[in-house]
Length: 121
Image (cartoon, rainbow, N blue to C red; front, side, top):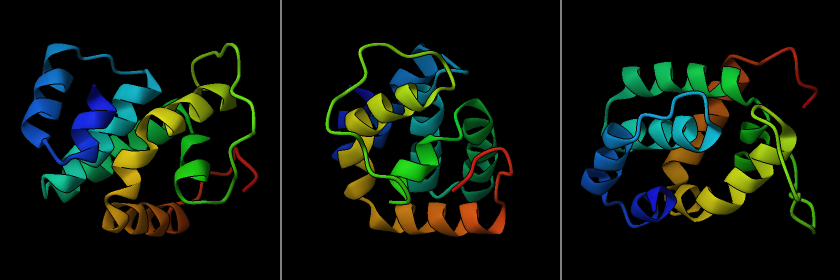
């Protein structure tokens, strides 16, 4: 539901889910919070959420910024913080990010300004 709410820009419903089910440490939650905060115009909070999301799963940014193509087959399982988790998240939330190209551009700029050394882009 979270990805769907963000895709249609229903920030109120997305915010309600994020508040009701605070699942920090899970990429789907962390990266949804990044987009929700950005779309809400809360740039400082979006930057803070982005730092947290990147630490939890730095692979996600590679898919959302187009630096890595998703595989043809979805993974059968995943671990938190893994590339497989990022792939599944990208599938669930790709429409939400694609519907907001300004958020993707902002993400790409932030990733370029603050690269993470632990991942080879």
